[in-house]
Length: 335
Image (cartoon, rainbow, N blue to C red; front, top):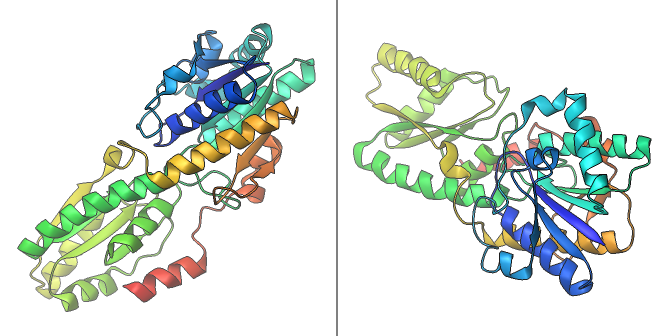
């Protein structure tokens, strides 16, 4: 058999662990298989830029951040039929039996479109996909995205640094977290590090109540703002400063954007094991001639949940962006 591996969209810690697992599982379970890396994500398939991989290529890479295969965003792929057909044909013409994909929403949608073209034309390649995204916004009804817990670890580290400075100067810090339209990363980081308030996407914030909370604490406060919230951290700062001025609240406010710090660096143990288990499970499915699909799970050793690509891209069936009420109540109880 002949396999290809693609890391797509924004990088997330754990992608290299997934690549390592697919390469090593494939070659150990069937040494006759050849495994190829797609260079620079979906652009690599369009350009037919493939590199044959050995176990040595993945040695010592499982914990590393980024992706050894590279990834480039191709936003025009969404509406460009010529690109979509080129992907399907290049996979077929290069005799790939399976394409293994790890990436976010864009990669999942690209895989689903490619699968439709392959099915319609009777081409050979099947596509197996899993979620690699720090945002935890891909099919999170059934599992979490590879990279999510690594990003929480990085967030905790930075939030602890900020707390030290905030405490020394009795400051209020308003801190932006990545996460796109999902509030999971901001909320879980806030719970783990004991932030005083986390503003989630779509929340109707009572800023007067927030000002009361800050004033009553009379010490450092950290307010985390999810990326998908409707106001920037500077706008939140201006609102609070105006309230502080009217009420003579003596607290200095600073803003910090955690940004790409959350996405870089080594993968957490949890993400390494999770990515490795899913990669291994997907290889076993390929050797069992499974159809195209999306794979996810919560825990190593548990049978992955397998969705059709059509169901996986349907957010109403697979994904929720709003945090469950139980998680919100949990966070409030710890404030």
